[in-house]
Amino acid sequence: KEVYKEFQLGRKYNVIGTDVDSLPNTWASSGIVTYILARSYIEPDKSFEALEEEYYSAFGGAKEDVKKYFRYIRKNIWEERVMNNIPLEKMYDNLSYYIVPRIKDIITEKDYIEAGKLLAKVDVKKLSASEKNRFTALKLENEHARLTVKAIHAKRTDKMKANQALLQFRVKHKNDLNIFWPNLFRIEKHSDL
Image (cartoon, rainbow, N blue to C red; front, top):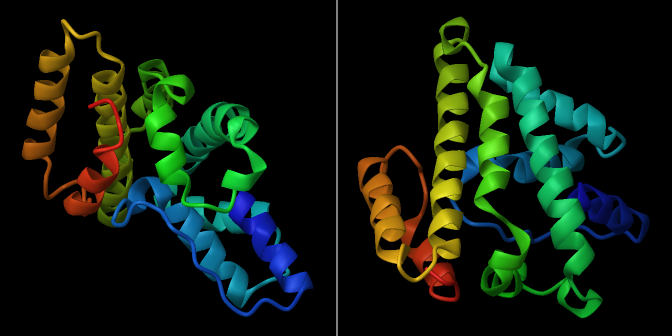
């Protein structure tokens, strides 16, 4: 929602381009940002909510559950913990370098467990092949996030076990996750993994 608000502010001052950084190739979890921004260029008068609904419609019968998922993440993590704890001077900097070292204070494994419960109710048999692929990718990215945060929060005595579980998941799903691994590893070197 923040990117949409900034886009609308830019329109007011005749900005003609944008540059949004996110973890490349994590479309399942961050594609909504890129989608809404791109659609805002085409239909700048559409509300955020209308564009959001348009995005969720790509999940077919899972639309309402996916909407609850993204709204949970946005409200409980992004709005309540990230945006309320970023100094104004960091707001327009590369946020990943500010957030990653502080991730223990921002995100917990419970966040992704609760978010995952919102996706667990979906009957994938009722989805088309493309809807099922999108939905499955989102579930995989949620599980990847859960394991990553679990490894970051692990006590020293449990760190090896948590990191091994994360590594095994990454190896098993290296092609399913559609993550550009070199970028992820570059960012993670600033974390507690």
